[in-house]
Length: 391
Image 1 (spheres, rainbow, N blue to C red):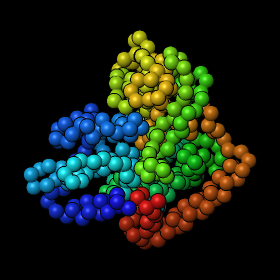
Image 2 (image 1 turned 60 degrees about the vertical axis):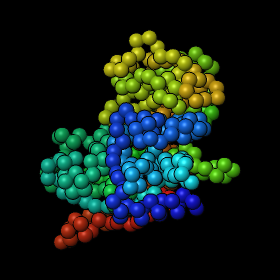
Image 3 (image 1 turned 90 degrees about the vertical axis):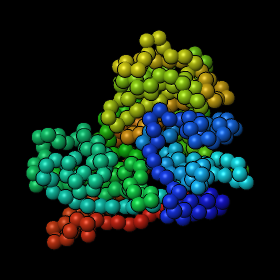
Image 4 (image 1 turned 180 degrees about the vertical axis):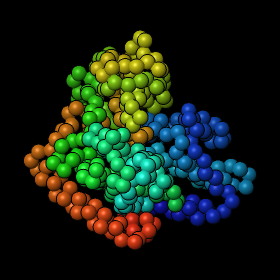
């Protein structure tokens, strides 16, 4: 309960003049932040290896909060690592301490329908002021709808989605549960099932799939956003998949893309990051060395060797830590690798069809509501779900 009390105290202090909010700078690390703010770097070096890895996951542009005393010294600090966990730095008996705690947020389920006036992307931004939602909607239909030629003025779109809110502001990426768009009055649907989009018949509509970064994969640690350790009584996370392999085994690019980082990150050791498109990035960590010629800006093909398995950074044995990011949000790599099924069968298909039927009915209901003289601000479904820190 201690973290809950500290957060309550922190939020109460938000009404004072000593709380500061800012965005995390590009290239900033927890160590450089500590140095600039006179926080002992020993606080970082005393962390265990997994926690040090996680501090490398702080995303540039994420909003953090700090509570300062009258002398400008930091009393408390909250830095989100991802949408589920945050770093909490605080003073106890005059000494700084650090812990990982759940990110506190409220999650809302929203739905609305609108008529297209300019384009789906522009109209969505004008109505919701949420660029990430507009981007996710386009991604969901990208491979099934031609947005340039098929969409007509007056066609409708509808969305049911979840959105996290933190301190009254949009936080993190929206999750579209179901969506519909018309082309010449004909509706087309997509539904989210286990993190991937499918059409009404249970066929995958996302064509972006990654291949294995190693010829033979042996999973030694799976992806998890947040897990409470029942013995250590601390929160852990693992924002990728670890593949065990011998030192020196070639590592291959999981997809076509451009290299945007080659270098060292404290917990992850030798790292390469590849941007595949405007949505997806992959990260390859703990490499023993990079392949000659791999540099920032270089375009690589799927299956091309980019480096070799090692144990640089913080690790207990040679392996590859493989991370996948969708709109800068860490997701489970196994859901976008080619071993993932792109069409549903059997029990999974039955589960999907039941879910799709439910959401299709809800979309038809909100379309019916939209035909009544109700303002946009009045009719979107807004249901508060569980808070992120109370799961």
